Length: 355
Image: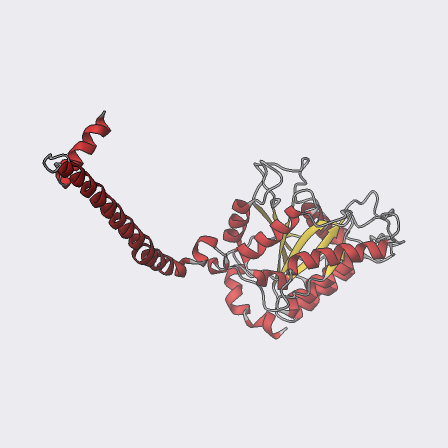
């Protein structure tokens, strides 16, 4: 909490630049008391605004999660998987009103929805341009929580998933994962694959995603807490008070907002700086002088020496040929052969080349 509040004065000017609208949907949330309780905790330790960045592929439920958390439809859910003209980022800033909860009145939440991270043209490549634009858009901002969104009802982490995760690390720096919560949508998985139940399948899915992000390095082990989410109100079961449930009976909205609160209070906010972006072309720039020196040494000590030896061998062979010709002519009583000098030889070569 001390770390979260230490930059309060520095962040105040930045946060005041965000134009907030009344959080009207809060009053409609069945989990309103849980949300207000978490916001009150943040306010008590010095937070004025909770900044949340959502990342992930298209059609995994980022925009739907924004709408579910706010209790109102603010984010446009794409009808198609990939759209080249989609907005790179869509920030939504909401402020708690006195009428919704006096204990958290004035507290704001900023949800930054983003475009899908796969290329809109091919669909099977990472959208590096979108990642760079997202990074530029949040430069200097305090990001308290990152939600990396994917679907629960998928059976593996494929090459595109791993490519996107690596691109996130390369663009934002690996430290972004220390502020990240894994959000798995389509959590109302009533029929898990044969041979597994809901809990074991969810555990394997979370473990696979964590493994892909962490990689094999024993020194990079971000915690990556995970929350399951179901954004479809038509299929999501509820309790008698309307709180949204998962197949195991747990309430996912309090779980998500609670995890977000813990993440925001647990570590200093993430701030993107351009120096965090890994640029492959610049990583080995210090090797260029060594490569150039190596090439020069190879030319001087190996290649050029071999070429000189070849020239000497050719000259010796030519001397031997002309010596034999001179001997033959002498035996025949003929004068010595006229051996052309270097200039004459060059002129003859040019004449034959022209022909």
